[in-house]
Length: 303
Ligand code: PSU
Ligand code: MN
Image (cartoon, rainbow, N blue to C red; front, side, top):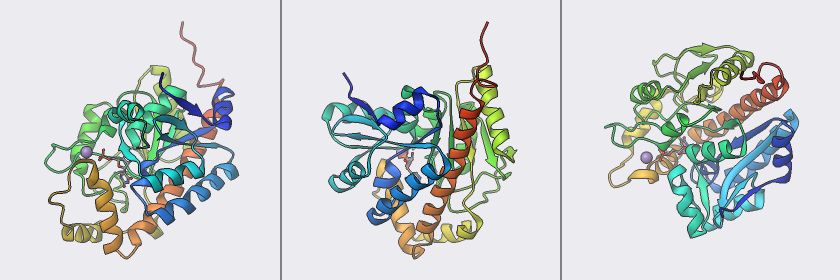
């Protein structure tokens, strides 16, 4: 039997249809420096309490899948090390009884199993230039229904190819208050996406997906706040200075994030933290709205 532990408050919230937002652990373990992760955990918990929704951070501890990990558990993962885990790595980490820091794909997969419909992150994986390294995230977005709030993906990825693949996979994509696919630190990429202007509109699209039984994840792209934006040309300049030879596979994302933060003197890190908070606020509003609407537009009965 696979070990699965759901934090009591999260279990109750799912059962009584209170708002819950799921979140990955890879962003804390591989994506940010340790000191930042520690403070951010508290801040995000405060946000969720203040706004009246539950935050369920997902990870794997000693092979047990945990939905709603506690701070000391996150700190253990950071200290003792945790494998970066996409959906396909879940069974391996479970059997080997080690720690697993979930990425977007694994988090969406686990949230779907336990009934969490809104998930938040900073950035998703995508198609790397050359087209041979394609993130599991994209496949998982096409595997089942949820709403995922993020700020796009890093501009090192092939944004155009990623957007095309999302179309191929029939994943609905909307820009929240923007007509352009945001690229993590930067608000603009030149690649157009359909715009939504309110949480209400997001909720209606999600409800329509449910009614149509379109079993895909609605990708809500929320650009980094303007005051924290690092312009695309600047990010590209830093990236051009980074040597990536020899860094492969799942090591690449964490390596690039660290290099960028050093080269920008912390600007990309500040942007990363700011967008995570903003994305959680938006995901929270969406989850609150979904819980409120439950029993009305969300309970479309099948004949
Ligand atoms: N992009 C970021 N920060 C991150 C990630 C992506 O700016 O922490 C993480 C997320 O967990 C995402 C994963 O799901 O990297 C994608 O990794 P890969 O490209 O190896 O699939
Ligand atoms: Mn990859």
